[in-house]
Image 1 (cartoon, rainbow, N blue to C red):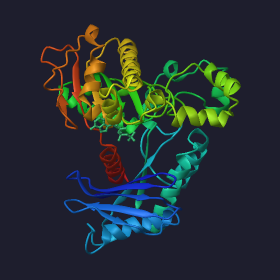
Image 2: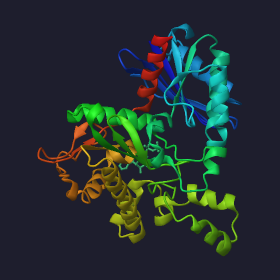
Image 3: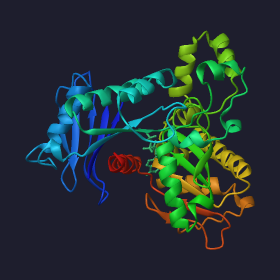
Image 4: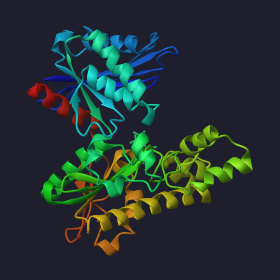
Amino acid sequence: MKILVINCGSSSLKYQLIDSEAEDVLAVGLCERIGIDGRLVHTPNGGEKRVFETPLPDHEAAVQAVLSALTNGEYGVIDSLSQIDAVGHRVVHGGERFTSSVVIDDAVIAAIRECNDLAPLHNPANLIGIDACRKLMPGVLMAAVFDTAFHQTMPKKAYTYALPYEYYDKYKLRRYGFHGTSHRYVSERAAAIAGLNYKDSRIIVCHLGNGASVCAVLNGNSVDTSMGLTPLEGLVMGTRSGDIDPAILEFIAKKEGKTLEEIMNLLNKKSGVYGLSGVSSDFRDLEAAAGEGNVRAKEATEVFVYRVAKYIGAYAAVMNGVDAIAFTAGLGENDKKIRAQICSYLGYLGVELDGSRNDVRAKETLICTDTSKVKVLVVPTNEELAIARDTAALVGQH
Ligand code: ADP
């Protein structure tokens, strides 16, 4: 089956065409600057990357450009659109309604729209992408795969904020968590690689990219995760603060005369390791700067690492131990120094990192010693493949 996977943002649209039986990526690409001017970057499997500066006035034009590229005689990978069996859409927020991936119909669209308040930057953009695909591919099955769905198994004590209860009743204000598709995919792979029974295991996944979160996976179910109502909570991230004392908002507002909107922008876009270091949100730049003696870059990394170690400790506590810890996403997959620094806090759990096994990038690998009480792994995430698998499964059931 050929599944088109779409990840639609407000001005960008990422896509992959995946053969779900062979689990091969047939083409990958990205539409950028939608509604501004427009650019399509398209790479067929085994072929060279093509960049087209092409007007993309709206998302429908972007989807049309993707479909034209996929069927192009020279750099396309299919003969006609009828070869696309289904489309899998990444949707950021499914609220409490969606606990797994679903086939999209009018009722699902209405329910996703109801979650717009919870993810005002993401859900409307996801819906625009769905709408454009439905128009241009009528009759093709569309699936929604939610970032939040995997975390719907969290117990109430883990997702409840200690605020007046009426806010939960009125607005469903609670922890939802994100990166769920990644945490699900990586925890399953980690169990398989470590030789654990997924349904009888305690796994902590550290998804460390520009956005970062930790997830406690008990017997195959998410039981806690560090992101909250929004992706701002939890770890220190590239530009997000993660956990802070909420009273800081009032303090900054008074001292700096900032509005709430300005402070939210500061917490989301100007904080994290970027704000701490003043150098960059990218750990490669931080390491280079620290190597040249930049103290703030070094300290920013220390604060980041410390927070990850703290969450691992917390999640080992709530699961009464941990069998495996998996590192994934840009930083988790590629940065052996960060992994080693995090693991240096975990000796009390019986974690023993193997220095030479840890010298690996973006490859499924056990990076602990044979005697380590806890298995430690690198597991490259693959959200697009997980979306394609879910979509293919829904086609099978339909
Ligand atoms: P997101 O999808 O959240 O935007 P990624 O998962 O692509 O982020 O991760 C991006 C981050 O991963 C970069 O900001 C950088 O800090 C880190 N990263 C990526 N590649 C490397 C590398 N080779 N070495 C160290 N860090 C890396």
